[in-house]
Image (cartoon, rainbow, N blue to C red; front, side, top):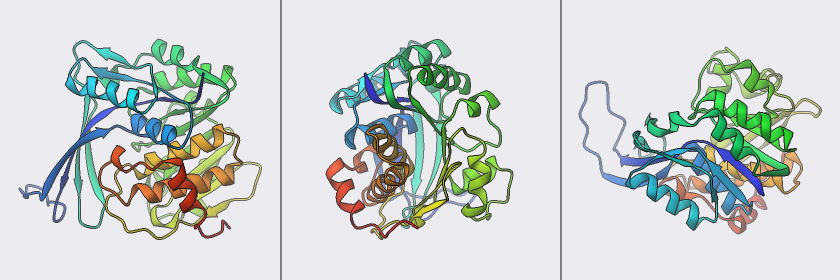
Length: 308
């Protein structure tokens, strides 16, 4: 039985480092190319496992070299792999540009990620122990996430939906089956139908009202904010780090946050774990390569400014 079970995507990441982002119609020479593991779901599962949680992952990859590499990754990270291999669709691919600032632009080709069925997702949820955390994102079908959350809740799990990539509307039934929403500032504004410059303190209560228990808004270098329905809002600042690449930082936050909740940590303590982990993920290039272990998370968490 798993502490954290993730339904989500796996992508082959092709990361090009560029001197700046190109203008429309412009051809730009990259400084380098990195090929690696990615996909929000798989990243979050690896982040949870490295943070110390017994972790399972379900999704769909292709019956190709990238799909076999994904299975090898999950085996190496001691993640229970419940993902299927589609005989016709390719494994998902993400094309990522990274600027010198560490900021990125990403285009995803979904491939087999779109083929996850409701039945497969529901079966996988039976791996969740009572008190586990079931995690999903928006790179796989919403109906599959709904089936997954419905059965995971019946197993006694807490459900956590990362609203990425952003979209303006979600299935009402999926929101009703979600205990905690996790969004960045842009995603939160889009879901709340508010201008992108709206401060997180205004977005938080609106976003929290969409889920059963509340919401988290991640704020990049400003840390993260927790909005629970039964508690005052809380801001956890981040510690300053030398940013190399922000790819995967949000996924790292989600995995570490879920792992902490699954071991019984209070939400404010889980928030600190997530902020520490996400900060560390920015200090190395790539997604999976940058995901930190439990000892590193604990060390940086001890250096975080107090939550307020």
